[in-house]
Image 1 (cartoon, rainbow, N blue to C red):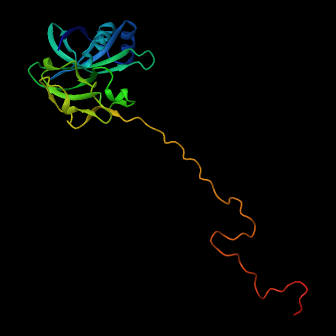
Image 2: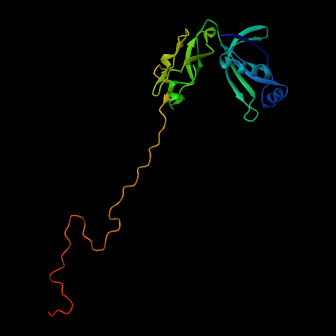
Length: 224
């Protein structure tokens, strides 16, 4: 993992007013959580944006000099302005290069269009990141898996990830990519013809003899 130098300054003033003033100056208030102390810092907005745009992103190892002392850190969280979509606050945490840490790493697909998609299947990306444990300098920028041979019904699991010399903590049976069968709408069945839709009045049901008149029923003009 490549190390990125990040220039920071110690910050004394706190509160919303001081933070707004810093942002107007093109600076971003930040906090670094150390092994023993928590430090209030400021970092240039442009420098922070460059870190976020790098391939490593949140997993970039940052070399920070504070009051003449060098520290190694990773980005923990970045708060974004909901309208302008620029960083307005950053959290960092100090790391030791000889102690293992847990981070999440992105999983990317390669290899072109999967075979199943050529048949109408749909490629789904079920899990975009996995959690790993390793030394800071061993953090990979990302994992890459080849999806080109996936047919309809096939899947790539966490256990299929390439071995990059780190411990993967995400369960191996979780699906990363899969190709689902295309959704086929069933054709509407033609309505069956209904025989005798309009039955003749007084007609007997099929297979039954016509009903005989009641013997006790009197005919017109007959005497009792």
